[in-house]
Image 1 (cartoon, rainbow, N blue to C red):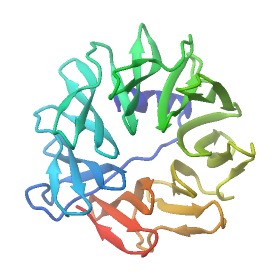
Image 2: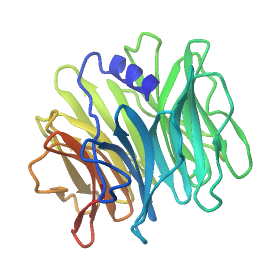
Image 3: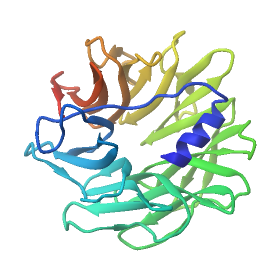
Length: 325
């Protein structure tokens, strides 16, 4: 979180970026003074950060049972959760060290992805494979590890900075930038074949995500602001999700659906069906909505109610919106 926030700010050359918020009905999980932010969703559950009295922990809600639990009890601050199936990953600050941890919900095991004294941040998980950013001798690299086989390493050796990696199956996407953070490009690597492709090198591209044959990202131009794009890897066609004068931020994608935040600090979350091209607001509520995530038919986001943030979920099929915190 610390590393990504710093590099992200440099890449956007002073442009403002999005944040996150949320809460829960379980009184033992959150109080009125708590903020709930940074949600991530999989088919079976949702994770988020709850911050109270200056301390942050990761929580998990099982959507089938409705039960909410703390992922790992700790006096250390935890940030940036990501979930896929039964695996949860997050950033945890241990004194001077910042490391990536994971939990297997099936076995209950909690541990570091890789023990290191180097700064690690911004982990994402798909299946058993985790990707994250790690700083080595002043340069940030994207690393990966297969939790089932133990195989790990750099995604690509480079003298350039790599950050904001994301993963879907065997495909990893990341932003690569020079050390002055004045130019950036998006790259994609298949971990099985080793093939690396340049996805886009126009302007400044950050906050990428991938699902199947679709890649989405936020592209910044100082003259027009931030715009979300989608590329079909099969056809090679790249297009804007929506032509708008408002800034568009932090896209996420699952299957044929893209979600993103649009507007300023009081922005709201939109979704688009890439097959029908229908664009709609995720919620009709007039409140700040940040940090959307999507998996299958479920969209989650953080929403501001008065002075605190809470986590919400919408089922695309039923249209039902549920407050999770």
